[in-house]
Amino acid sequence: MASPSPQPRGTDRRTFLRYTAGAATVLPLAALAGCSGGDRDPSTIRVAYQQFGSGTLMEDWINRTAESYTQEHPDRTIELVPIVASENDYFTKNELLMSSPRTSPDLVYEDTFILLSDVGAGYLQPIDQFAPEWEHWEDTAEASREAVTAEDGSIYAIPTHTDTRGIWYHKGVFADAGLPEDWQPTSWEEILETARTIKEALPEVAPMFIFSGKSQGEKAAMQGFEMLLYGTESRLYDEEARKWVTGSQGFVDSLEFLRTVFEEKLTLSISQHLDPNIGETIYTQIIPDGKLGFIIDGSWISQNWTEGAPNPWPEWTETMGITRMPTQDGGGDGFTTLAGGWSWAIPQYASDPQISFSFLEALMTTDNAVKRAIADNHITVREDVAEVQEYRPYSPTAEFFTGLLGTAYYRPALPAYPEVSSAIQQAMEMVMTFSSTPEQAAAEYDAELTDIVGEDEVQEESA
Image 1: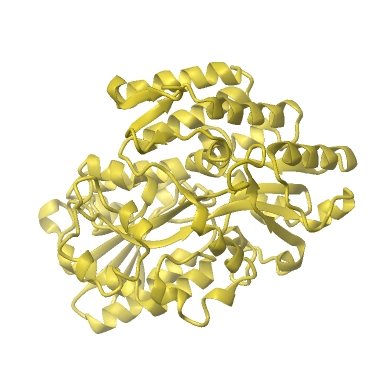
Image 2: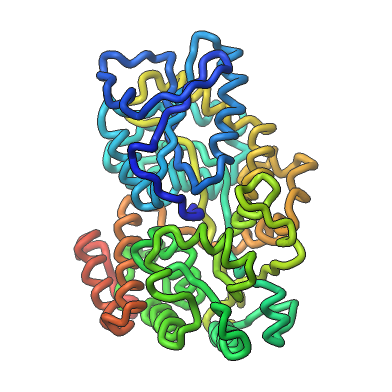
């Protein structure tokens, strides 16, 4: 999944949280760097994850599990390795940790979009000896199981949850702009017309926001560009031909939409879009302050407004509306969404994979998965969780976003995808900064794509 941007704090601020028989202490990152591969104690489980902004939901989840786990296994120790970094930096820092036996975690939190790339780079080991025997493997949706399975058929991770995307809009802004409270656009043009209406009626309000550019990482590719592209007749990858697509009209059209948004100043400033942490500012300040009309974003963002969030906003349940993302001109199914998700994986240099998986199982019990979904506003991928009475009504948006899964598109689950995503982000930035036309940026993307995957792996859309 592409989740909200974390607030970066320098690498000197990264820490370990160590749990032994339920007790916690904080260790400096230097403690990890100082260990040699031969010093690794297989009874110590290092768990690496991304620390999102000022929130502690992930830490709380692992803390709760670590306390009970170390009480059941007093000979084992859990060391939490929170990586506080922007989205792109998280993947880089995680890979650097996994690249050496000296620094490798024993369990890592992986976005499914980067998983197979990390597999190809040799950072992760298969878990075929564990996953099929895990009691909830068959409870996990087939699409999610496929997302963590490589082309050779080996399983490399356990999915934690999924997500879908739509449009969140501020009912107060809409009312002030004379727009309907029950809004459902049926085309891209209706989205633009709504933004123009807000701009004219409320000059102090940014009409809309779509993640765009390299600073926003995968959020730009998935929440932004692909929510447009998959509303056209074009695709990134031709599943039947097993080729990446070049010469895509939908690619150009998606960039054209983006250019219109920036040319007409229907969004925040370019400098704000280039801020890798703009997401957190939007969620905690701009939206609650009524300074944004609508945002194309994911199912999870209301976690920023719940009681346990750093800046709770209880009024969100009455103030925010949600609606589906329309296709370009209302064709096809009329609406589109992208689904993603995260997972737990075991690095190649984990000291004892069996012990690592035992803690993974503890993290992923039915009770833990339900609590995690409710706390973090997630959509479950598991039947056992969906059947728990507390799950579906936990959020006013849960049923809406869960209902989008049936027709959701998924990113190409291929090792090259992260590099392709980077090329998409570059094309978006070229257009939003007016350094290239949509046609020029699309041509640059085609050339970059060919360099990434090779000429034999691409084909023209018209072919």
